[in-house]
Length: 166
Image (cartoon, rainbow, N blue to C red; front, side, top):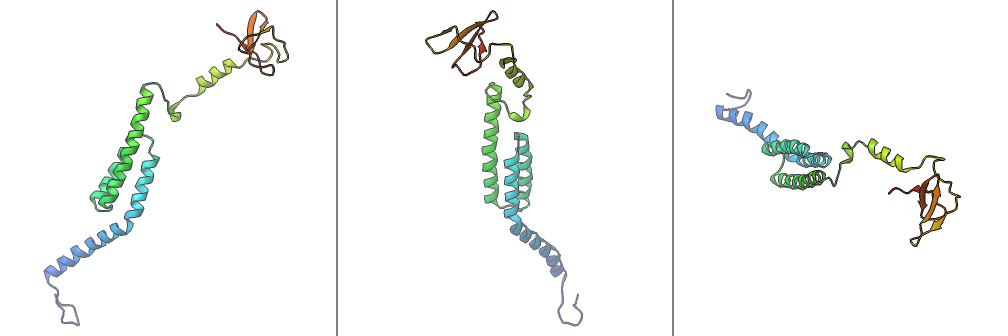
């Protein structure tokens, strides 16, 4: 094949080289130019993950980008380190939840907590008034009062009375 108006001839191997090489070079150049932004986006997604499953989904995405050379090996190592640290954090949280020492706030129904706290707050008029005088003060500084057949206590003369429960 000859380019019209010139003496330049292009053979089959030249065409194969151009149709294969130019797109490949463009792809590699695109990958190099956009690597840092892509890595930063994956880091954000890892930091925003709320569970180990979400971490795994993000890891699959960046591993695919790594395979297509859209991320460099050093960026893949960095992302894996971040994923591993976050995975450990989620694992520790799961272990604490299993031991009953921790509950994630995103999954807690707080209604029972509020209802339990409301039980501790005396209803207005159900206990002695703040101005009520104590019957006795013990050696720890607690003031004690008998009111309507129930025993009440408080820590100082300006606080509310609390019902004593055995």
